[in-house]
Image (cartoon, rainbow, N blue to C red; front, side, top):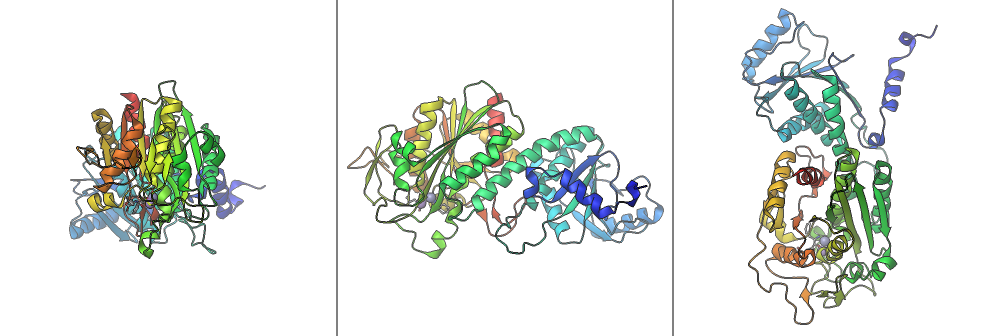
Amino acid sequence: MYTLRTIPVSLLLSLAMLLSSTASAQFLQTSTTFSERSGSDVDTLVLLVPAGMDSPRLSGWNDRTANQLRRTVAATEFEGDARQKVEILAPAGLTVERLILVGVGDPVELARHDAELIGADLASHINATAARSVEVNASLIEDQALNAGITTAIAHGVDLRNYRFDRHFSDPAPRPSQQYHYRVRSQSVAEQQYNQLRALAEGVFHARELTNLPGSDGYPAAFAEYAREVLEPLGVTVTILGPEEVLEAGMGSLYGVSQGSQHKAHLLLAHWEGSDDQPIALVGKGNTFDTGGYNLKTSSASILRMQTDKAGAAAVVGAMAALAGQQTAVNVIGVMPLSQNAISGEAQLPGDVVTAGDGTTIEVANTDAEGRLILADGIWYAREHYNPRAIIDIATLTGAKVGALGSDYSAVFTEHEDILATMREAGELTGDRVWQLPLGPYEGIIDSRIADIRNTGSPGAQAGAIFLQHFAGDTPWLHIDMAGNAFIDNPSGINPEGGTGYGTRLLTEWTRIFAAQ
Ligand code: BES
Ligand code: MN
Ligand code: ZN
């Protein structure tokens, strides 16, 4: 008889991988399970240790193990502080290959993002070992709610760190193909929380993928199709306006940026109607490549990586995917103007005047200040067609922002205290940090001599913001300048190298928080 025992383990494993494969499998080849019992065939045991335990010990451990632990803890001065980590290879009395003690500090005090960082640290460490089957044991965190909250946030950090953009390698290095088993107090509570965080992680993965796509692959129509394929199965209504429709709707400001490119402007709309409240609008800059136009980016350093100039729109796609994946009870519309800022005989010229959807005439004093040109029509379209209760725009907008704040914070601009307060709250929760810069007084900084307004001014980040404010009119609005936050060269924290997906978790949590108040 063909019993379970006669089926090779490898076959069972691949079957389990297949069954657990969802859309997620394209990004992560880790399986994640939660239960109140220990995992099987574990080669790596990770013990989460609250601060202030004399000698961490699991029931069932014999004296040899306990003794070794006591000596190791003393020798390494391990005190269970958050992010402290000690590894013991071939631990006495246990069958696992390695035992890793990971401090979680005081569980009551541990912030969600700090738990995510613990997970990210752990994933990075595990990936440098031969570990295949990891058990993260949370038995020492007694409180049930804290036990689930901390463990699932750690799992989220593991997932976020393990994304890879490897579609262009002929022979990609094996993804982490590992099993993570979390031993928790309540399987059902943990699974329910993890599923929400997994939907959030999937949103981040899509944002990273879109950010990372090379310019020639991720042009406006391709970006829009990617979004459609991801969002429609989640119940999001996706509408794509092509170049003719953009022109017909009067969006000359959006159209002009790509008029010289073979890849002309699109407007991507994504609507998640999880409630029948007045909608919230998220508007993302989707400039799929920024050559600067005739104000060409002339140094190799300034033009390299400008495929990441679509990261604002990518964050909006990611947030829409997360909100829908989580079945969040919010009414949210994503508006993504898509362009490719490139040159040819038909390209926009410095000094040209374009007319935006709302009738504003704009002097294009610099073709490289294209983000505000496409966002102007995106913001106008959101107001005109959806009457939103609030608009957030997010964009890799200015080099001046990078000079002011670097890449640890994005810059936010608003006159609405409630939007600012909730955005700060979302920033602290997720680690997508924000810092406010002022909107005034900057009288006349975008005045033009030949048109209603001009697309440049000084100081640079503020001029961009004030330009956008013109199009937000009296709708409560906040602008996020995420230049410098979209991409990193070296892995750090929850991010592998490459696109960070910055803004996805910020917008997702902000939308939930703001809609609930
Ligand atoms: N996409 C850039 C901003 C940017 C710069 C993002 C560096 C990420 C890293 C934007 O379109 C741009 O070129 N801005 C110009 C505006 C200027 C011409 C008024 C800038 O900041 O230099
Ligand atoms: Mn530019
Ligand atoms: Zn740009």
